[in-house]
Length: 166
Image 1 (cartoon, rainbow, N blue to C red):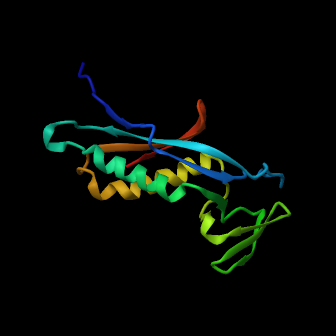
Image 2: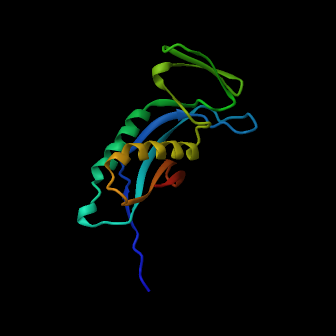
Image 3: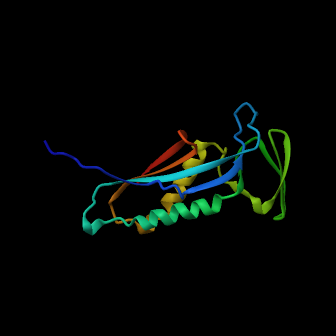
């Protein structure tokens, strides 16, 4: 019997975090109140080869996580493709919209309008996984990384992850 080895590297340091506000919308047209979380993010990569010649520098993973956290820090996250979001004004200075019939006006610089359908832990994990893969692909040794998993926790013990097979 031949043993198959799988290797997993994880970057889950306390410094990879961001605070932001959001409101999850539900399919029945209701939503949570606008509230915030102190999100913690981490990445795990499954490798087929950990030999010296195929070594994966952790710095690229750290840089990608730091960039994501910087972009999301102290923002209001809104889902651009949610059927219950109706943008009324987006003039670069203010963003005025209705979410589930409630009117909101935000300074535009404070908002990240994400190309997803909801701001939930699951949707954020998937969106951030795509961003992480895009950031890491140019730096990965050919054929070594099998999967990339992005995890986001909105509080200790509560969160979501998304794994992408390459």
